[in-house]
Length: 395
Ligand code: FAD
Ligand code: DHB
Image (cartoon, rainbow, N blue to C red; front, top):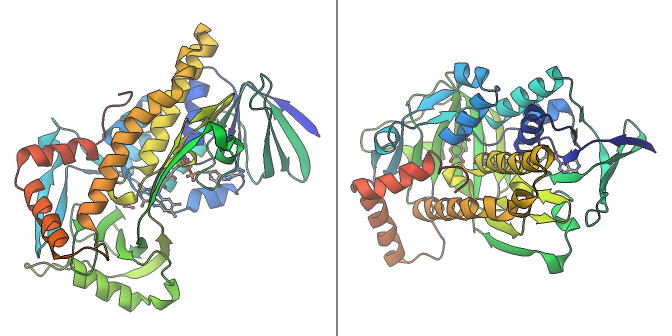
């Protein structure tokens, strides 16, 4: 067994693990990142695409925002579509000038990996059979196989950044954790298409045949989603059927339709709301999807993961630089007060925009009234806008 020693062992090189590693490095704290997948896989995994103003500010402050600033698309509004019409929510006007930036999660991951390797810091890609040891002692360690050889990282703390299906959350005894969970009776079918965006802003569309989302990645690539069955069989969705359904749901009274193009990626995403409480146990801390999941309708998953990294990096800095453990003890509370507000927002956007099979005509009218209210009341639109651009960190 090869033994390595560090201050913080980080399992998972997604947005949470990579941002944590970078913020710790800036504070002079050592870490080793251990990742199951290859660098190429991590850099090509297509997922979320909207960065809150708070995430953009953090990326810039941490010195990893240069390419995002050059290539990201700044959006000052979104559109809500229903009853055949679209209504703009002016994010910047309603939030004192804030906006969101459309920049793919895999681009964030690429930038963070490049920065870490340029700093000469380790990411052990393609590490298998990870196991946590002694998280309830003062000497935890992370064991795994790397390049065919058993390894052990001895450390002070372990950061569980290994996503919803990872091993870190299950390492907490069931008697020491409460799980809050809600599954939705639908999923999203997402596509990437080689088609220039034909509209400048995102459209969140409520239609009688279900939700649709019009988004983009660059001046040549659009990203679109359709509400579908949770266990939808992708083989039943030819490119032609996907475009027909998108056109049906997105076309309004003005006749606009998305510009079609070659579909270069397709996938189904399940929808759930999930929170683990607490987000820590002994010397183990959970971050991002390992601790909480939101349905994607508010575009919050990656942003929450990055916010956790900030909270934990500050708490660890308090410990290593000022010898104070209070912020580490308060890590769960520091994250969850904001996480629950973001859960509420993501649930609300999801409920307002999707078709629920058991909705009756009353529910349907109430849903439309909610959309009509949000798009005509400045007070209601402001609550949407301030959540969408990102609630203040550390609240
Ligand atoms: P992840 O990005 O999941 O990173 C976890 C990392 O840990 C991965 O690199 C994984 O390979 C690694 N890992 C896991 N197990 C192990 C192990 N045993 N050993 C070593 N490494 C391990 N959010 C949105 O807002 N909008 C979207 O459209 C959207 N689409 C999504 C589509 C999919 C298919 C998924 C799964 C999520 C989507 N999300 C979306 C959510 C968003 O992408 C996540 O919230 C975000 O990735 C969370 O970051 P993370 O770092 O916590 O976890
Ligand atoms: C995208 C994903 C979301 O979940 C969302 O709410 C908006 C945009 C996207 O992938 O572009």
